[in-house]
Image (cartoon, rainbow, N blue to C red):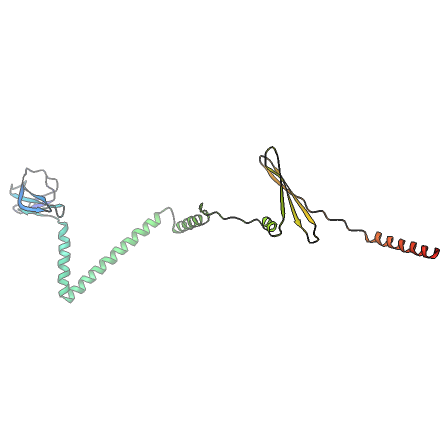
Length: 244
């Protein structure tokens, strides 16, 4: 079976890859590549029965037509032709200019084709670029504000004022459950008295209620009653003086 498409040099017959023919094989003496043996295979043309040979090429992972036929396409032939063209262009300024122009035109065509393919893909894509940017921003915000390794503590203003004013805290616990049922805050006032700021804590299975009692303020004395009392005392004092 032919490993490639070839053309017979005797009759010019073309034989495609995979054509089944009778062959015989031998090992090439004195030729190896990194210890790999090179094989030679003998074929016959299907039209004129002319013999041609093909050798294995381990270096390029391919086969080489050795005698009696020509290969239709050789991958390395394009590279060799490119190298020869470059060498010829280095010696002649006009050829060098032509070569550079051809290379730049080919690169521009490749860039245009790539841009066209990208525009087609973007047109048929279900997700737009704005949606992608928004998703990236959400992921970034989530990674910053929802980091499980970092816990931010919110300071309680009530606890801070209790610490600064040296308030005495007295907890009353339930003897059966051991939970805090009431909390008493004793804070010294400016007159040297202790203000009782009690807080009742009631716990239930589903709701927690806190009740804060405000400090009691003594009622003000009525000024009119105080004035009448002073007038009465003054009159009694005068009566006592006259009687004496």
